[in-house]
Structure formats: structure tokens, C-alpha cells
Length: 293
Image 1 (cartoon, rainbow, N blue to C red):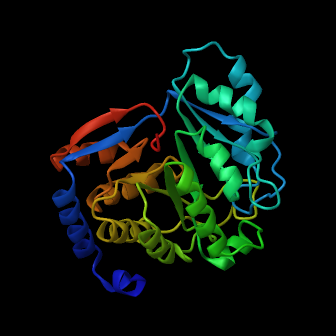
Image 2 (cartoon, one colour):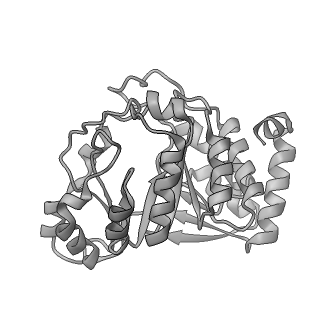
């Protein structure tokens, strides 16, 4: 699949993808501004796993679980709960399960779990409205970027376990391996076999203070090829372009290509994409909660 997609003229590929989208969905796009979803961490701000692309940087901007529970009700309507990963790739929510359940009682919960086993998947599935699961199958990326001695099959097994107990939205990070596409098409093929209710795409962002800070994100055109391939492979599945992606000119270029590739939902779309949606005759639906909820 990858070689065929790369050999196809981009304009032709996008046209095919958009035709499939028009045949499968009504003419509307959802633009998401998730101001009503509070990002929360169930752990401290230091991450033992220290993935090469993140180093725990994004935990620092999240509200601690105990602080979220102490906030007056009504300031937010839903929650995204994540946390630091242990050395096995798991976010240890289980250690604070009662508090996590309290948070879920306040509003719908989008839960980042990492690599968990069947028993933990069952426990967390009873609490979460949806699970966001980073899905990848490339052994080199898992080892060199995540620092895990795990395989793609380990991620697939975890995905299966989570799906047995919860609604799961797999997340594919395009260009996670230093801005290069390594295994993303294989991940799509694996998801085709496993099934997916929706798929969320995020884009590698060079983050200051990490070993990958000097790497570049994948070219927008290469990311758009993957999005178009996903639309062709999943004609009736909602496809999201998530919040984690570069801004500025990159976002403006990518978001427009994403619309042409048949994406259904974009978080914090670039102004140019908002204008393009109107030019394409798409009805714009505004949402204020996390795109996976």
C-alpha cells in the first residue's frame, strides 16, 4: 500500500479520497476548540520513561488529579486524563483508581492508558468514556523513541484488550521516528484487521529540551498522503486531525490538505482551513470538548 500511495500523484490521491468521503459522509466538517475539556495527570510531572520526543514536557501543563477534584464543579464538562509512563509503557492510573473514578463521575473521561494488561483494561474500561491509545507497530520506533523493549504485537494485544472493555480511539503519530514515516502504513493495515470506531492522527512536533528538538516534522504532503490512504482504507470511519501538530505555516498547509483528504474533524484548525471548508461547501460544526469524546 505504501509504495502505491507514494507513487500516485498527490492531487489524484486527494481527489480519490475526497470522492470516498463524499460518498460516505454528509457534507460537513467538525472544528474542535476543546476549551471545556480539562487535561489532567494522575502522576507527578516527571516521567520515568523519558521518551525521546517528549521527555515528559507536556505533563507540566496539565492539572494534577487532586487539584482537578478540588475545583468547583461546572468549570469544565469533561476530562482528558493522562500521566507519566512507567518503564513498561503503562500509565499507572490503577494506583489511584478511586480518585480516577471520582473524576469520571464529574464528567466524561478520555483516558490515556499506555500499555496495560487485560485485567487493568477491564477496570479502566468501566470508568472511561473513551480510551485514547497510541498505536504503533514499528519495532525500531518503539525501541528508539519510546525506549521500550516491546513489539508491535504487544501494542496490538493491548489494543484488543482495551477494545473488549471500552470504546477506543487509536492515535497515530505521523513522523514519530525523527520526522520520518516508519511503520505508519503498517499501523493502518493492522487497524484495518483489528477494526476502529475512529482514528485520530497527530503529527510529530520537535520539542525543545528533547533529543529530537532539531528534527523536522514530516512534510505536510507526506502526512496528507497517509491521511488520504486512511480515508481510502477506512471509507466509513471518522478520521480526526488532533491537537498535537505543528502550528504556523505548517498547520495552514496541512489542514487544507487534510480537508481535501477527507478528514472529518480538525482540532484548532488554521484560519485558511476554515475558509477552505466554506469554499468546499462543507457545513462547519463547532465542538468544545476533546475530539475523541
